[in-house]
Length: 497
Image (cartoon, rainbow, N blue to C red; front, side, top):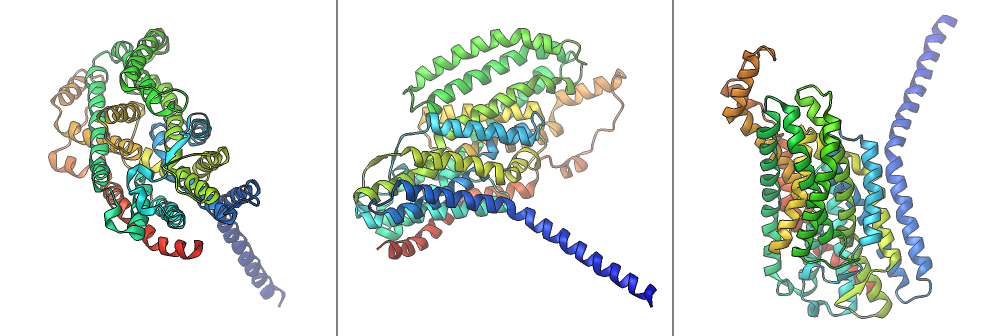
């Protein structure tokens, strides 16, 4: 009898052990949402404490919670574009990237974040059509909730989408629900729609062009190290100059107003100074390196870490208004009972956006960082360098042409550009074929069979499933956010009134 009971008891204990493991696994999955919920509650309580007794304090508390939720989603989705390439190329670890991005995103938002925003985002809706305070606040609340929900869904399916376009869609949908189609500035909407194509295409072309340059003048040279000593300082100087101009235009507008020609001159000066400084450093760093591609990657690692920090700072300075602009407009309208053309962003509202973006990145960002950095196409430091440089240059070109572009579309488009260029180059480059044959014929590399056309056609260097998912998400971002916002507007209006 005793022998029969013992196995049964062991089985029961095993079941308890499995239940404990399952509970622990589920519990770990709830840690991040739990911390996010605590952050939202703290933001709501802080807003309530600062607005105690003020007109519309209940509405402001609700708006603060929604704004915090929006900021968390921006951090989870949008910031991945800044650090994803550096992580994917292994220039830095995921933990290092999260820390750097969180610090520089917050610094950019608090130090150089825009202090004045238009209450009707991007001039999409005629202000006269939503001049009533109740209608306006309901529209802004609906826009915030809808864009946050859409970004949350996009993050869940692993698609990096434009925060700006989500807000644009939310404002447009609420405006149509409140005042009809005639209230929408369709010329502005057409230019935004054009940026869906312009942003990724331009980013991809520029990234591919730099990768082609690196392949031709460094990778496929007989003496790679000598070529790197000549050209890597130039490439780093170009990156430094581009980022200097980019930050002057987008990241420092609160501190000092700089026009395009001045920013370009500033960037050129910075580029020359950086070239003079890094040339001896690259020479020392390259001493003793073997004449192979793996050695070249070392020379691009530090520039990638710097670019991730600078992109995060500029993103925090430029895009935090996407999270807090509608919130600031709601706070102003609730306090004064009137709709203003422009409003100042209170410090506590800016803090909600800055810290919300950082928390969202730390809690939920790794999924999109891995998508951008590793799953679309394989990145090494040279390719990631091309992506980061393309992001800065494309924004400068677009600003000069007055084109509304998305930093998300630019960065992800640059990743696609690098991947598709590699596919084309691997299959069609005579220079590469001659180089490989020369290396193999000299005995310096093992002889490997050249892939035939059919095999090469099957070997896609860009994952088509991710490409189609991301492009589809980009196309439907504005309509999806608009539909959700239009439906939510009527709910918000009833609650507020």
